[in-house]
Image 1: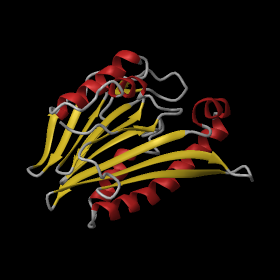
Image 2 (image 1 turned 90 degrees about the vertical axis):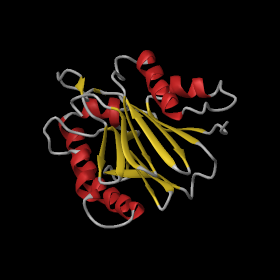
Image 3 (image 1 turned 45 degrees about the vertical axis):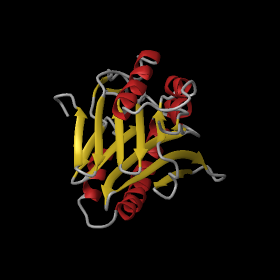
Image 4 (image 1 turned 60 degrees about the vertical axis):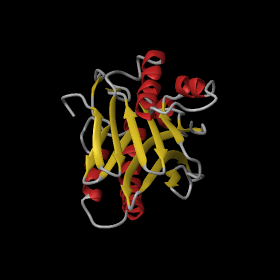
Length: 241
């Protein structure tokens, strides 16, 4: 049995998503819900794909991943960066820099055009997570970036970024990360003396717990990807993905 390590990375405002990420030295599993909830406005929630692949990389997204005006699309930016050469950490750095400028522009526009929405749902909190993973040279690599918006003393917006890079920051045999809505999954993990052997089933169960707990923000079906020594595999995928 594996040692239990659970970390809730993102979970302040603007969540409306759940990602369950499990890493061992030889594989990474990412499970996600499918509900896209727009910030403000009259747009109805809809199904979306929060996971995808590019080459040997699997990735997940949570938070402000797309704008209704289609001038900010995190999935498209990730695919663009992953289509360039470089190590996973190098491309994560490039993506981080690219997202900072685009995200700040989008947040500044939202604050100007929808100040009440910005103050209630986005100000001084988590706004975006991107997670990249691949297995290379028989080692599971994981790059996670959480973006938080802050107001500088001069009134302008700035971003604070929390970073996780594995294997350097994943010393234990098995690590479990939760992104977005995580209260139910973290409560459940706290009751387990050790993790079960069937890690894909655990990842799916963690997302299902959040779907049951927060149905207005987290919705079925569950999509799930795995990267291991044999490559990239969809474990669960709805037809639209």
